[in-house]
Amino acid sequence: MNNSVPLSSYIELTKPRIAMMVVVTASIGYFLGANEAGTNFGVSYYLMAMLGTGLAGCGASVLNQYIERDVDGKMNRTKGRPLPSGVISPAAALYLGVAMVMGGMALLLIKVNLWTAFLVLQSAFLYVLVYTPMKRLTWWNTSVGAIPGAMPMLIGWAAATNSVSSPGPWILFAVLYIWQHPHFFAIAWMYREDYARGNLKMLPVVKPDGKSMFAQVIGFSVVMLPVSLLPTIIGMSGWLYFGGALALGVMFLAYSVVFNRERDERSARTLMRASLIYLPLLLIVIALDSAIIN
Figure 1 (tube, helix red, strand yellow):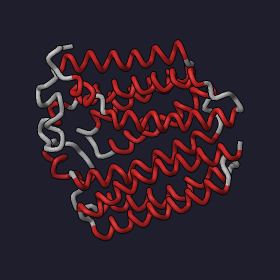
Figure 2 (cartoon, helix red, strand yellow; figure 1 turned 90 degrees about the vertical axis):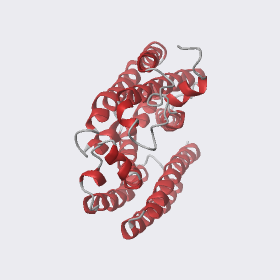
Figure 3 (cartoon, helix red, strand yellow; figure 1 turned 135 degrees about the vertical axis):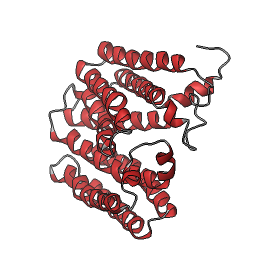
């Protein structure tokens, strides 16, 4: 690494806020999996699992920016990032990203288990080599990108149980997968002009009238409500979670309806913020419910 480059620039390149969300979501998966399996939490083992997951996640973010450095340079919201601004060289970013992904994979393989390492590798592959180039080709990139975005729940569960065969982690994977669509569509609507400058095929760029996008926002918000209640229905969680998920789901749907009606930047930003409140609260509620049950 170039010693003249501030450490903060390398940290920025790893997208620490996204990495934190990945680790938090994987942690909930680990906790729920350990509770269901009746195993000890295992603090040192857990730390190794989260370190490997976070390291690989940071590396995937670096590689994503390496591939998109030309696009980022065209968009107002991203042109100040370390790569398009020239603060960090592409070669340094490439080496760093590969090293972090491989380092995280090696740690998981040696200290955790094969299932967790495989899921992390699959997530990084889909994010870097499938989702990232798809953004230049088709608006379906959002649905494909939501797959690695939802995988931390499976990763955490696999770390705790060495399996993802039970329905619980897949239901939570489905909730995270569905949640990402309204969340990212709100962002895409706010920055549709910027995405157009970068020639990224986001849905509001490809179909600027918004009809298809708003239909999907409402559709996914409606579907997310019953899917989020399934953990109680299958006996994985209790009524505390059911009540919390129901209230949060109705709140999320209400903001989606307002966004559909107003169709402006303010309502888009409100929905985005509501989505960032919804997910952490949902995860907290199911963790608390699981702790009470067990």
